[in-house]
Image (cartoon, rainbow, N blue to C red):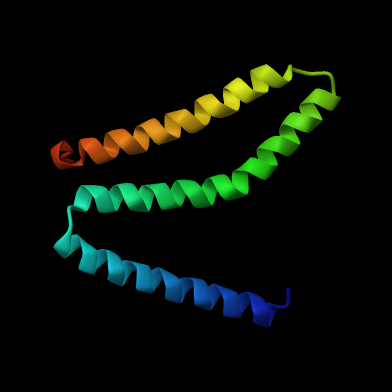
Length: 102
């Protein structure tokens, strides 16, 4: 990717971010903020997982080929991490109104 292409796609990404911020502000005035936070958290998880799953599969293949841990152990560790992230997002959504900082 050339520098000009990278700058263009970075600019387009920033524009999408501003559109999303505007939508979030408008939706926050009309809907329950808790569910907007849940939707935003779910989108962040989706984006992270879409990039992370191929990497996790590659690591698990390398570990198996090297004669390390079994597939089930790696599978359990990966899913425990994913479920922990999902649980944290769910708890933050459920109790966001009761969280006070400072």
